[in-house]
Amino acid sequence: MKGSLLCVVVLLTLTRLGFAQIDKTTPAFYIVLNSLNGNCTVVDEVPRTDTPNVTVASDTVYRSRAEAEVAAKTLTPCNR
Image (cartoon, rainbow, N blue to C red; front, side):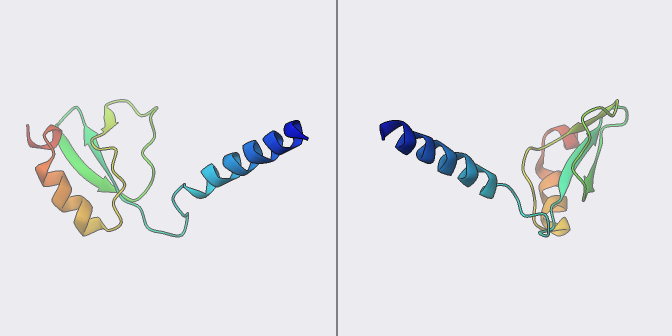
């Protein structure tokens, strides 16, 4: 009985973690840094990690493009 209860608790915990992710229909904007020229841009797709010379400037996910553009002006890597 204890094993069954433990199994149910673990399964419920794992399924709740999936609900914590961002909804696919909600707009999401990211700030990426081009390390060649030092420019930051706002993109609406998840940045790819295998692209050379392009890194994520901030781990924050922004809900609007305007919010991301204001944040890009305040980030240290973007203002070098």
